[in-house]
Image (cartoon, rainbow, N blue to C red; front, side, top):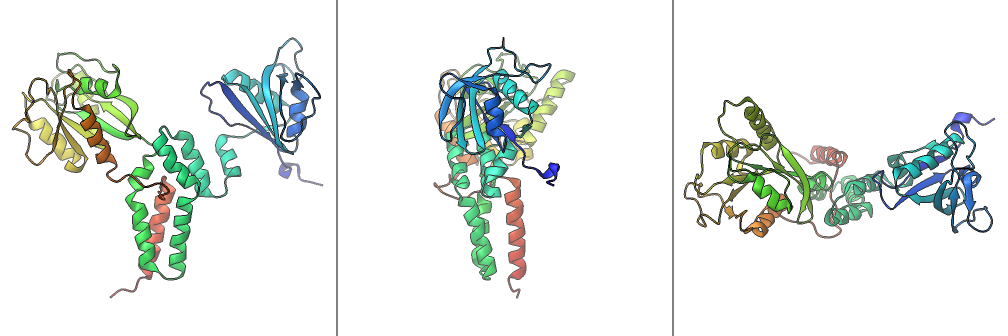
Length: 385
């Protein structure tokens, strides 16, 4: 007798996002897939029997909430049905959540087991790298990052790891180390293919942080007022710069204050600055470079800092108080000048050398741990002395 717990299950998975769209796709996969669908499905014409590779249109009759019987007064859900193989059926329905949920509920009532998209990916992927790339692709927000992840899905990263292992097996430790180092160089970019870079706009009050945020986004997101200290909290908005996902973060102006609410905002600003991937350190050309600028620079470091001089419509010369070693990008929020150069500067700071097509790239923490373990193994094998 077969163990019921080990019997093949019929799994139902919503393949499309739960975000409302034009169409939602639900897959039913397993020994009861066809019979379960045919129990509920009524074609607009012809036989209700589903043939492999046929695409049919009809209505899915849903069960009532009280029992597993269909309600004849319920019009059901209009669906397109595709039987892709002997035990797999795709149901394409209205993209709102209600239609898909009703279909899934009815099939579960008759013995199907709901499966998550992540579980579906694991079942269908050829290896862990492809599964991870598929999951990352679901989170990709730009065409540029999608293309890089597609290279990894096609096997670029998996092939690189296999090459490293072959080098180690044949005691080619220098070659293995070189390839590991090449992959590690792109680790920061790889992690940010789906996790936006945090770019914080910071500086003293009234240097134009909120105005610059609005200009970079292309719409009004932050309140702008001539009174200093208007921004009291962190304001983040997602966008992309040169195809790289970025979270632009407006922060409270840094200054001494006895106002408890403003002080709390400044503390949050300091935390955001310390956790930033890059900071845009804004300088008013009239006020010039001050102690707050120096303190921010010291806490962040020069490599993560981009100095931006605002109000170029008032003063179009570099402020003499800015330390001479820093390049300065000048912008005017009023005249909308200097933004192309600033965006290019941000992009080059984040990704100095964009990868060529087909380049292998680690893009999650597991890959970095694997590289570290391989490097440690290789180093122990290299003769010392």
